[in-house]
Each structure stands twice: as structure tokens, then as C-alpha cells.
Image 1: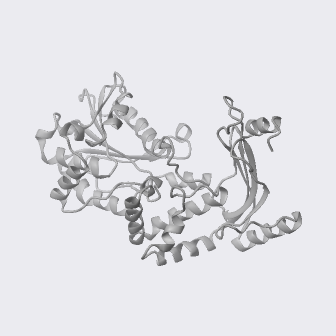
Image 2 (image 1 turned 45 degrees about the horizontal axis):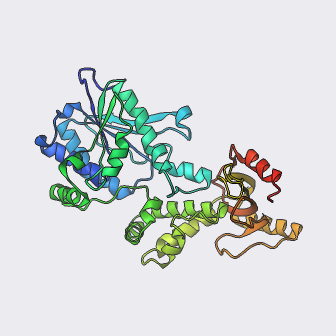
Image 3 (image 1 turned 30 degrees about the vertical axis):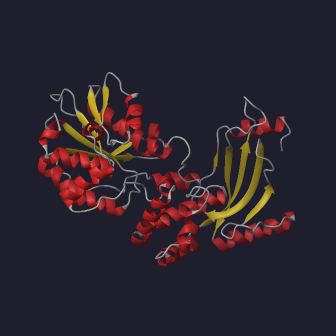
Length: 393
């Protein structure tokens, strides 16, 4: 498993399957003058989220793996083994200098985590989904590979991403040195695409999980993603299913900023078959009545402002979708409260609505596929106590 000890300073290349890192590998493989190390010093590492687009994996299998085999370059593929990296660790899916299979299905998928939590990846702040599913996994793998030796860590930041490179360089240590060949070469995304096309004859797609919300933040990305959905209905249904459950538990949780993927899909040409499949899969899935409680405690620095929300999700009952809607209606009749049908996709029985933008509390019951697990945030009880002390609900 470790890099051979005669290699004093290994070169570790993080390969994300996308345009930038693909361009680096292809140039290194065909142009020895572009690198200052022999290829037997290079180890290419891939962290699989389990939810990469199928055509990206197919292209890497067709055009990259044969070249790595021919050059005898070592490729190590790894994934999360379970929900907790600290407890479950990582699993090496393949370690070979003659790789033939790209194990893009992973092991414990990022979508497994999202569905269990009843949420979707967030676009605000740090890309925690990428950190958990890729960054931390690769850190654990690299530590096993280099065994404390100094190493060069190659990342595919292009010429327009100097800020990202500078930020990454702050993680350098006496052991790790980040390097950014594309910036050194002055290559931007167009240069990378042109180089890949020259060598393969194909236009390389962006690498991402099929449900990545960052791909849906602008019109170009939405068009590209929805077009891919018409070609790959499986990933489309996964994204729609993930969003469906997340919205049931949190009306503000769509995959599209200030919107919902399902609404875009309904108006996009060619999506009818995929939508029919999604509706059929959803109808046949086991469902649950969930009790959702969410607390926004007063912020310590300013009690008039809301602090970070804490959530409690409980599965009240499970069964068919019809049975769970029947139970929700029965609970509504019993409590004398009308079911909120303002959202045609998600009916809710409200026990308490948040009435202000600052500190507050909400509680409701909703029906959704029984994929989310019972979970209470560690800070939920404390946040609820703070709210109660101030009589804010």
C-alpha cells in the first residue's frame, strides 16, 4: 500500500475525473517535458462519491485507464466505508498500475448520507459535501501512501483559479507541498478542453455528482444538467428523490437556489419519461409520517438575531404512501387542525409555525419516503432551552 521507500518524494495527483485534472494527466503521459519526475514516482488517487455521472466514468475508462496502463502509472481508488470516517474509515476499491475498471459506484455513497439525513448538499459557505466525500477521504489515503514522507500534491486548479491555489497552499506543511501545473502552464478551461479534444476527439464533461446544486446555480449549468438528465434517467431520479424528501422535511430545501429542481424538470423538453419513472418509484417506496421540529435559538452576540438552527426528525409511523396520508388526515381530524395543502407536492400538518425572522420554533408533520433516519441534533435540547428561557415561542 505505501509508496515504495526508494521514492523519496512521491508525486500524488488528485484526479477528480473532470476537465482540469484529465488535461494534466494526458499532458504528463504524452509530453515528458511537461513534468520533472519519472512516471514511476506518480500515484494518481481518486475518491469516489458513488454518484458521479455515468458518462464521465465511461470516458475516463475509455481514454484515461488505457493510457495509465500503458505507462504503468499507479491508480488508487478509494471511498468512504460508512457514515463516519473516524469510525468506519475508508475502503480501497482498487490499487493497480494496470487499472481496467473505474469503481465509480463507490461504497458508502454521498447520496446515502444525504438521504439518511433527509437533506441535500448546501451551496452556502464551505463545500462540506466535497470535504466529507473527497477531501477527508483522500487525506486519509495519502497518509497511508506516504507514511510521513514529504510529498508533492498535484491539484487541477486552472489559470483563472489562483485564489483557490493560494488558499490551498495555506495547508502546506513540511511534509506536503501543493502544486498547480495548469497555473504554471497558463492553461485555462478552454486550453484544457482543447488539449483533451486533440488527444481523444471528445468534449470532456464537467465532473460532479448528478445532484450537485453548484451545477444549478446559473442558467448554463441548469441547461447542461437537465440535458444530461434526459440522457441518464437514473441519476435524474436520484436527484429528484433526494430533493423530494428534503423539501418534505424543510420547505426551503430545494436543489435550485430559491427554487426546486422538480419545477424545472416539469418544463424541460424530454423529461416526461424520467418524471414518469420518478413518480412511479416514489409511489412504490415505503413512506413515513415524520415529525419535524426546528429551533432557531437567540444568537449569543445579539439575542434579537437567530443563531444556527437545530433540528429533530422523528419517524412517527411507516407504511405505504396511502396509509401515511390516511394517518396524517386522521391526526388532523383528531387535533382539529387543517392540513396545509398550499404545496401541491407536500402536505403538512402544522403544530407550530415560526412567526418571525429572528429566534423561533417550528413543528410539523409530513409524509415522505422512509429514507431519512431518526436524528436529533446534538445542540437541539440546548437551543430549545434557550428559546424557552426567553419565552420566544
